[in-house]
Length: 216
Image (tube, rainbow, N blue to C red; front, top):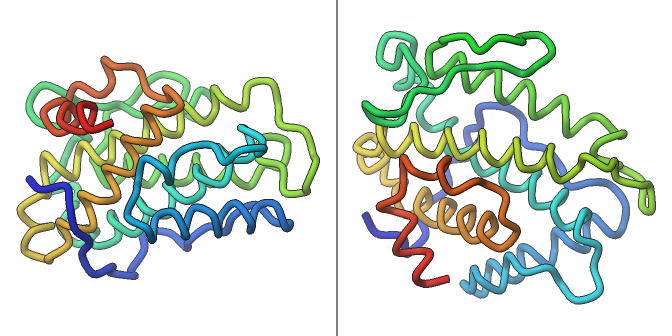
């Protein structure tokens, strides 16, 4: 699988796209992301800009990566069904069960589309909660903010893992593989830069990630 090049973006989304945190700072950081991504230098694109707040950088990028996965999964909605994907899996060795600790306290076995549905609901609740993702410039982030971000990234990774293991051939057929690979490379670089996902969680896509780790 090639990680280089960009494919055409299918703008169908699983959920409406989220906007960057409001205020001049959020938009300024979003423009920085877009500009550095446009240069093609993903290592530079993920680094915290000099003088910027780490939590604000994590917040803006979390919204961006949510939107990336949203668009990618949107291209597969008609192919990822309870019939084709009765479990949320990443190959034969890895199966993911859903729990959010609030509505669903004990992990439950669900189909892949139901897992993604639960996940996107849960992420949207986090992003819309101003006590977690402040919308106003200068508003404080909670002490557990990084933990929330890490959980979001861990679960978004599972969607990538499911797509690669269960739907990559369809992605190729749709001519979206270049876009998928570029989005995943960007995601991995950001994850490595800020140590957001434990190594064991990355195991389902280790063979794709190791070459990127060498590049990074």
